[in-house]
Image 1 (cartoon, each protein chain N blue to C red):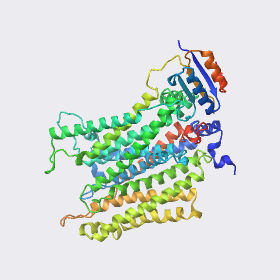
Image 2: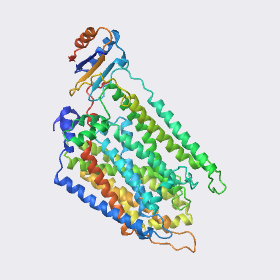
Image 3: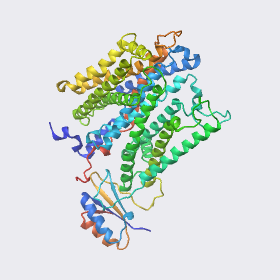
Image 4: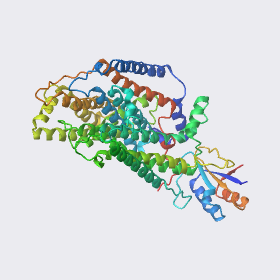
Length: 164
Length: 443
């Protein structure tokens, strides 16, 4: 069973310093989580969370837009309406729907990827404690790897109150 | 004046949270009355619709050759109002305008409700509303598919995309606030907030994902919002009809939409400020900035209106001039010049002269603009159809019937009703966004 440590900080810089020191002891970025009531932004290199959300958004957009265009093309050729001499299928006539469904795809995939990336719809480690963050505070939760006592000391040295 | 009064974001976090969550609790008599009156108007509108469904479209004032009337005016008007929120919020979010923070959620809620209301009108206008599902493309035994070239179907997809996007765009920043409300003392509220917070814990992974999603959604929604009103404009511009078949109709409608949307937002903000006691959070500064935006849009609206009418006048095409004349000199001239006065002259005086600019004058100008934009939609829709082009055809004078008026009144009541419900269930200002993040990198 994993051992968890939670340090409560008042300053963002102290958290950043603790993260850098913990890394040196072998704690990976995936084993550290910062909890706060508001978003906390660190300098680049401190607990970066790379993301493919934009890519997912583009892929979703292409799938939806492409799918809708294929559906319209198939429907218009198989169940043709009178077009008054104009082509049975044309991008001029259906471009608006292609555009809107492309955007719909982007909306759905962005939202879906948000749910995935944030961990909300992923299986979570139920043994991991979720700290109740006091106002104006930041909590750092770590899954201990190696010497837990050393990591606790690092948290304390960085100015954290280590929660039981 | 104290610093906190000028900069409410400097108040302690606990105080902000308390102030913004307070309106959610308790039910006053005033609130009950405020919700009951719109409900009555909605019920009357629903009754009027049942009359139309039972008797047929003959109960409306629509008659040959005016087949588009108040319902289409309502549709364009409400879709325009919907641009208040998401578009304005998205622009301000992408440009990182700090003053947007107390405004965005109120604006985004307007968008969602206005779209819900506006989106109903094509269905009401169909007459046989129960055939609405024929617009949806699905394999069926009739071997019939919708005509994808029809602007009606363009509207359907555009509005569906905008409603979906706006709902998600409104919901995303609500999640952290819902998580904070998840320990609410009222059991049903606790259940609601817990369900809506979908297990939010406030970890940095969640915050990062949320901020990324918000930025992406802002970009997407901006593109969708512009396209939606352009598509609405193309409902007209694709027809080879005088004063509709115009290349600038798309941007003209978008400008008008943002203009009316801002006016709607100004009124809603003033109402929230007064009735929810949020004077400390919605300051004169916010209204001043909104007033400046409104003034800018008023000038842009004038520019487009002039561009649209001047080219028609200079072209001197008989078909176009007949409609132009009906609008500016004959049957519809009173409405046209009233529209000009309330959309440009009054806002220019009230908002342009600094000494006159205040929350009250902003609200007065905004009510005028809403009236003016409704008239603009009417003046676009009805004169073109009233002035016939075939020599044997007779022109008609369209007057909305009580059914159309009742349904129109019900939509305004529905907006008030939905907003009152929303403001009682959810904090109208995003608590976590409001405060400048104390841990943010100052650089």
